[in-house]
Structures are given as structure tokens and as C-alpha cells.
Image (cartoon, rainbow, N blue to C red; front, side, top):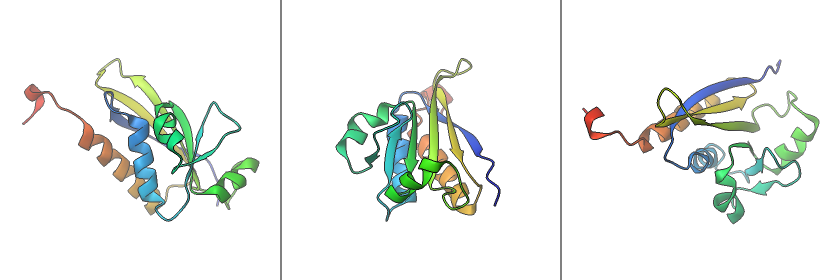
Amino acid sequence: MPLGGLDAILIAPTGECVGDLILRVCRRFWPDESSCFQDALDEVNVFRLDDPWVWLKGTSSKEFFVYRDEEAVSAWEDGPTCNNANTMFHFIIGDPLPSDPRFVEVAFAFDKHTPEVGRFIRDLTSCFLSTTRMPMRDAA
């Protein structure tokens, strides 16, 4: 399986804690695992998602990694391989869009498009859409 690194660009509401929304969907994606969080600016510290620090501080990060479990953290120390594909997701949360400041772009990087990753993207998109507040003039 060649790994090329793929990404999806999603749109999220500006006024929400996008990091929190992402982590909640990750926890549903890997429910039986001890998923881990790493801020992209911190090359040393990795926290399990059940660590309060993640929900108090980590969710404000603009770029972070979520690993399926602690084994995936170790596997990724050597970079991408066929054995660790889709066991780590990379997220980058952008600034408000110039064309519509109600929204931000969220880049989601993964290794291989699978039905499970497709479902993750749909779940994340749905989560973002369900928190979007539409002005009354835009409502149907």
C-alpha cells in the first residue's frame, strides 16, 4: 500500500471551539482505544485524550495530531509506514475566511482513503454543520 498522504479541507464555524469538536469525533472514531493528543509545536509531550489538560488547554491548539493509541504514537516515531497507516490524524485549524469570517478552514491529513476515513470525514462535517449558527435572515 503506497502512502502518499492525503488531506481534506473542511469548513467549521468560527465561534466554536473547533479543537474540542474534532477531539469528540476522534473519540467516537476510536472508542475502544486510548487515543492520544499531541500539539504540533510540542515534539515531546503526548497526552491521552482522557487527560484533563487536553480538554482545558489542548483544544485551543491550531495544529495537532491525534493518535489511535499509545502504540500508534510509538509507531509514528519512525514516520509513515504501511503498518501505521491511518493510526494518526493531523489537523490544522485556519483563521477566519476572508470571504466569510463566520467560517474557518480545517485541514485534515490522513494516509489512505478508506470507507472508515470517509465516514470520519462525514461525521466531522456533520458535527461542524450542527454547531453552525445561521443568522435569522439566512434561515429558511
